[in-house]
Length: 428
Image (cartoon, rainbow, N blue to C red; front, side, top):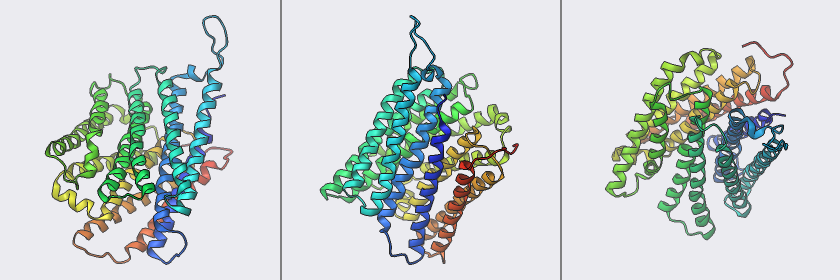
């Protein structure tokens, strides 16, 4: 019996649909009158569930899939030791990871419900704290199993880095929870804690795990280019001081500011040569996939390139103050990473690896979702630039609600036809 990735990924698609629906509800409350639910509570529920229920759940499932693919003996219940005694490795490990997935989903749904009901209340803090404990357990088990995988695989370092950053990101959550419970909230410390958690989730856990999956998917080796191995270390070294890119609005010491600028340059220096290597060595690999998947991965690459360039531009103090001073800019940037890079990459990876049969409805759904992502970023960017001159864009909230409808429709169609049983798959 193989690890049932498809079963767990069905939850991923359902959870992404819930995330999109919460976004739609928030957009409706902004554009129209809807007295039910507190907007701030909805926002907390939306973000926490997106992180735990959609992205973290999906990454954990796909990373365990990597263990089975590259370290099959870990999951092989028929193996025997030197004395010929049967070892039950597969059953034990599958049981452990299945329990971790179940616990993580319970925490995710707990946060989904209780953040809506009470905001940062007792139960929501219990579930969010429990989700961190689950992340620690996964980190311990996965790190231990990762040591038994072929260490020549370049994905191993990326996954180790992802686990490391996921663990240290929790410090920001604990600081935030303490401030909420003690009611001792200082604006700078509050924002610094939020950005600390977001940075090491977005640019650490999410990004490094996705890169590990990408390296595995493309079967990258140092023989393709010696620079590929250096890319990991450049991003890893840069990720730590890059946190201060989110706190440039603070009065930072000069040496920290210099480190921050260097980290932004390092990431650009690592990414663009890496992209050139991929185009030169792996272009033919992607040509074997449907056009809509090639379009998605191209979109992801362009979005991430833009993200790094925007990051580099934010090191200019005047631009940094302007960016962090206007909420639409911050929201656009966060969604650029969460939707255009991470979410679309995960959808690409799921369907490129044929976890679900692809037919016309799924192609349409994913394409529609990606169009919604693009329009959302475009309108938020226009709104953010217009806010510099305090220009109000007419009907912007109504348009953003319409785009949210496109996002919900796209992922709704994708999820429905992926989960629905298909007797005869359409030939790609």
